Length: 123
Image 1 (cartoon, rainbow, N blue to C red):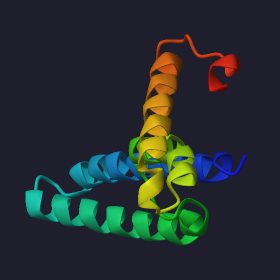
Image 2: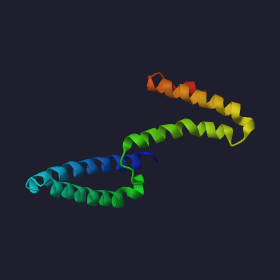
Image 3: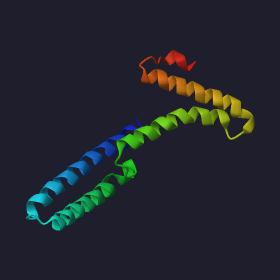
Image 4: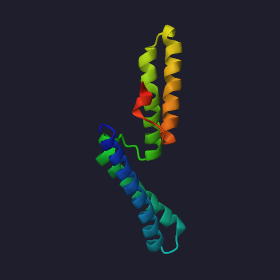
């Protein structure tokens, strides 16, 4: 549940930013009267202000990240690394155990990707 609220804020922010960029581009094209420089300026200003509002409103929840793919990759990498770091604990003597834990996590993630993961595989 800790991941749901920031992910929802990020998804919403991304969707709103996309709407603002596309909408401001369409608006700028119609209102500029063929002046490309004016259209770019209008598009840029509208995008900047929309981004500012989104960061102010959603920044405290999502960390002002508006790229869900990056968040999903970072979340997956942390899921892969946490058990390994628990085994390693910064001690060289635990390196072999941590390497085995990393290999296990990688295999479990691969099985999950292929739809073959079961909870019994964690043992």
